[in-house]
Image (cartoon, rainbow, N blue to C red; front, top):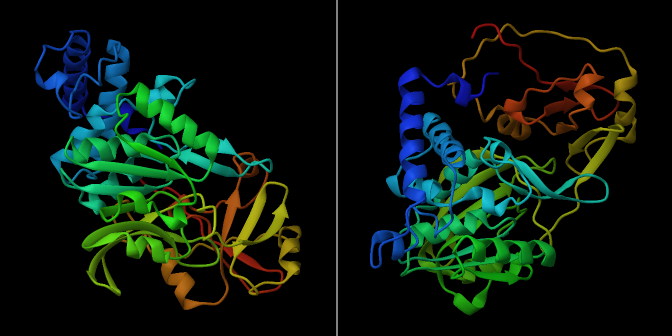
Length: 379
């Protein structure tokens, strides 16, 4: 797959270069007293941070990638991405990695699993558009992680709004607080605590956004949301960890109505609302995630049997609306699961689950697996 940066049309590439040059030049100029650069969180100077022409160019391409996918729906969200210096929240990483269209894992558990990450920029933009945040809003974020999202929230709420972000990991909370201060967002309140309990000190909130996979909506989130507030939550809809970012609008004390659902994947929320996953290890670097009590340990021997490949003949395009195939499978059978493979696993196994459906797999409860794959026929 060719990355968008290298596949930009000539006109768009020229536009990126021109904007990059202007931005780099502007960033070297000191702010005029009382000017827009000196006033609020929407300042394009990134709060006095001196940025090289190369860094500015990478940041511009970062925004162009998201725009090219049609994710930006509002000028405010696009402007927020242009304003936040993402690289300051990912210290020690080169600019290409910091602004790349990919997830960046920032902390792992002893077993190698991801505990925290900087989400894919396109997913971040998607959820911010779902949130519909307005200037002056009071917003609560569950899961500070790097602090990048909190900075974006601060840009969107403006100087008249308020942002609180809760992080259960004290090390991550400290990092986020340091990065937010360095980037000029010291108005953001970083709280070290269990996100399942929210942050009642600043409640009620006009908006709540969750940046980790949640198994449910805790009572505290309901209680701390205004009567007509909006909440965006990556809800885990199946024991395998199948997740969707769902935007809810509150219509009554006991009623949330969803009006937007997007495909996503997040590390699980830790704390009081955590739920143990049911997994079966197929190999050292291949894990099967499934609902509890739906498969025997015999599934662990599935890869010892010969593999068979059958192509359905179904052809789909990049823009065909098939992103919820895994959700349909999960609701149509009791034997749905998801495969998790490390990068090295792809090099020594016949398994090749299509990333589009996050390792969607069916099993017979015993020792047979069927994973869904795809091959490129036309470019």
